[in-house]
Length: 83
Image (cartoon, rainbow, N blue to C red):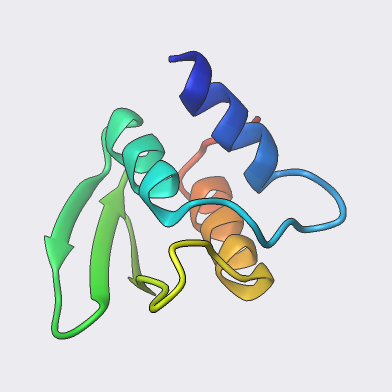
């Protein structure tokens, strides 16, 4: 749980961070009760508290970029999750 808390803090950090492991982001979302559905290629869909979002897993890097972190942050806020 501590790792998820740290990931959540990193997602909501200012300025927006770019070096968060995508696997940590996915693990956090699942721990918060999000449902994951695999899409085509690198796409992955999440549903959390009635809010849906589609993300692209980063590749070849394993770390998110700032745009992805901002999208995850917006998804969490819309789903009622705050740090």
